[in-house]
Structures are given as structure tokens and as C-alpha cells.
Amino acid sequence: MMGKKKKLLITGAAGTIGSALRKHLKDRYDFRLLCHKTIPDDLDASEELVVSDISNFEAMVEACDGVDAIAHLAIFNRWRGMTRSQLAQLTFDIDMKGTYNLFEAARINNVKTMVFASTNHVTGMNEKKGIKSHPDEPVRPDSIYGAGKAFGEALGRLYVDQHNMRVFCLRIANFNGKDEPGRFFDKGQSRWFSPRDIAQMTWRCIEAQELDWGIFYGVSQNGEEKWDLSNAYELLGYAPEDDGAAEVHQQKYEKN
Image (tube, rainbow, N blue to C red):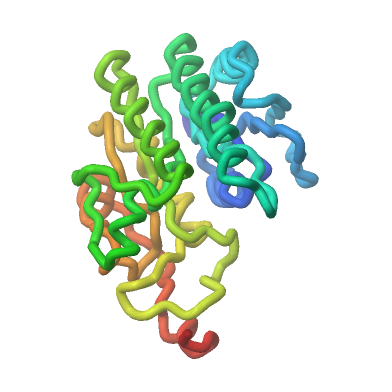
């Protein structure tokens, strides 16, 4: 007889990453889906739905009640033509505040496991200068977005050390929500993270009970010259199924 499935709270559940986790992890976990303005039109009867804003602390405390793990994906909705000041203000008011709310709500509810959707932009300046990034090196953001995610990583480290949580930060590269990269990548230079590979990395973090902390670059095969992926392979057993620079993709797209 199979044991009871863990309940996973997914914030930003209507987004492309949330949709990928719902598709590829539905046999592993029961879901509580946190949405804001957009509600998925394919909800299953087994999926719990919470409609709220991550900047609402009391609502986040309620949303975290009774779950076993959290995949925190939600960020504020960007729009074309945003000014730098608008981007910064909303990063402070929603993204950073919301991330604190989720960590603190998890602590209050004794939810021990958090997978935090960070970004490769935390070390984006390295990429711009052609430097390979490693998870254990200092952050080097290329934007206020990257700096905001670096705050989330630092907050996660704090909750590991002070509150005995398990926190895993995925520095996600290009995620288009599709089963192909959508553009040409040279060998070793791919930035594509496929839906099933992000789902795999997520469940491997949740189930790696011997680990309480990790920063992992989130990319499918052939991104090894941009980012050091060795800790994901060694610590998580991550084995990407997709290849952003596979011959079939290189033949389909023209090299820039």
C-alpha cells in the first residue's frame, strides 16, 4: 500500500514554471496552488486553490498551514515599458516582502522544506564577462531582479541556520515552458531549462532528506561552460533528460 503523498504548496502556480510542476509532479505530490490574478483553467478536483497576494502576510500564514513543502515561484507581474524605479519598487514591495512572508509563514507552520526559485541573474555579471559561475562564489547580480533574488537566497540561509529549515535555491536560467529551447545554443553554452528537468530538480531537492541547504544552477544539459552544475549532479543525483544544444535543436534553429 502506498504511503500518503506529501502536500506541496506552489506559489505562482498559474505561471509557466508552476504549470510545469503541476504537470510533471502530479503523481508525486498533492497540490495546494497559490494564485493571484490568473487562475488555471485546468484545475483538477484534487488540487486545492488559494487566491491571494504573496505580500499579504496573514494570508501566507494560512496558505502554509498543513503543507509538507513549498515551491516558491511567485513574483510580481512585469509589463512592457516599466521604468527602473517601478521595477525596483515592486521588487522591494512584492518580491522581497513576499519571500520573507513565505519563509516566516513556513516557520510558523513548521513547514521544513522550501524550494526557492532564484535566478542565474544572481551571478549575471559573470556571464556578461564570459566567466563561469560557481554556486559557492560571491553573488554578482546584473540587475535589481538578480539582487532581489540574492536577498531571497540570503534569507533562506538564515532560516536554515536559525530555524532548522531545509532550503534549496534554484538559479533558473531560460525557462520558456516548452519542450524545446526555441533557439540555437552552442555546445556547453545552453541556457535552456526544460519543464521535466525543472520538475526533476525540484523533487530531488524535496526528497534529499540528508541535505538542508543548497544552491543549484537550473539548466538542462549543455550549460556546463556557463555554470558549474557538479553539485546538482553529486548532491541531488540530478540527471537532466533534455539537452539544449542537442543536434536536433541545432539543426532546427539558425546560429545567430
